[in-house]
Image 1 (tube, one colour):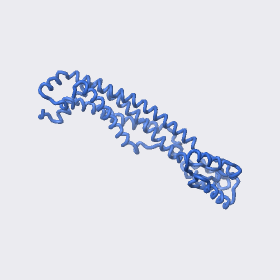
Image 2: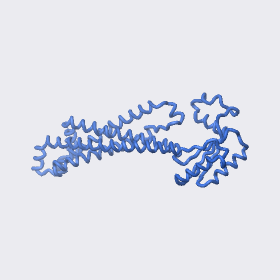
Image 3: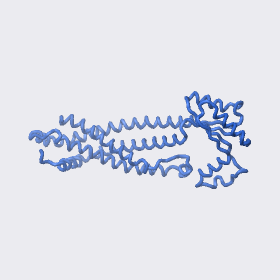
Length: 304
């Protein structure tokens, strides 16, 4: 058997792949679907994580002052009182003039939205942005203190982002569970389809395999083409899935309102920043699934 080169074994693999046309096609389609769904869920989860992170997660409280403007020294004194509270890490003060300027910068592509506002006609309030540490109970106690009108009558509203962040976290976990369920089902179906493809290939070449056994062919020599057929299936599926993933992701981005992204309401991760992870994930998933399916079938029908 030494006279047979790797190119000969590879040619046998490609011939076997084309010979089992219908089952090979079914394997590619199922495995491609598995990759496409897993890639889509992965991209959704990553975009959710990025937008959740942009909310500064769970440790920020925003205190909006009353509309009546106070002397500068009173704002400084208020800043010191807040900083002295337990579990407060930092306090950032934003004047109404600074708030208006920040909004002008944020909506620079839509200046007409803020053209009629100026220093005399300013709809914004002085704001204290507080970051804190500690447990959930510590955060609750801090919120209770800041919302106490007897201690902080200067505040009009005190809001936090815990509820919003928790809602997004629950949404992310739900998507993870759905993704996991789909993945288990599709991977199982892919393995079964690949097993059947290999089994049919073995059955079609049963006589050839028996002759090779008779003349002393090793188990590796016999099983290599079947294993490579499975890897070819995984590689073709990965290439097709990557192309479809690029098209579907680009299409979904186009469906989003353009103002949502340009105004900073939603952060969308460009495919150019994650394509290599998507490609690597598809190739690894294709090879692992193909290997498991082929190995089970070969161990059952060839006894290598």
